[in-house]
Image (cartoon, rainbow, N blue to C red; front, side):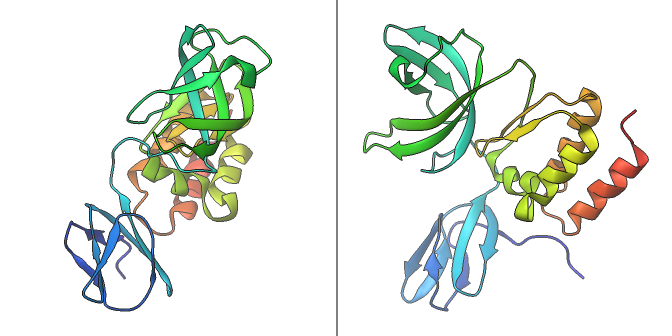
Length: 207
């Protein structure tokens, strides 16, 4: 049984069936094609292609993790693993933010010029940030947060995952956490990944 996901390239025919179009696909001559190199994600009525790598492309409703990169007169410049930095108005947050502060925010709206509007802004305590490609995040969260719950159960501490590819964590064993996250990242295209991670934790119990 093949456990690998299907990789497609620009121009690859995905299907001639009628389906709702997701990201990175296009419709031409009653057929659906891929517009990028990526992993095919297909169901009975929906099709999209997930990029293999690259920076985060903002999506309204996503929760992301960002770092304060600089302070200007009326706000803060945020770095968040995207093509450009973003801007947070000081009026949108009660506390002053120092450079290097890590925050969790939800993207409320994306303006026509690409600027982001945020809500649900939370300052995260000083801890560690694991960085990976945004396309790996769905596997790091898991179906119904199964993988995230597995991490929390075996690593201790708190874990916050941003859709932009950054994971904030203050686990008791930093090395074990990094190895667990890396295991998922390296094997994200394989099936039965949850069982593999369970086996990993059985062999590497938190001391």
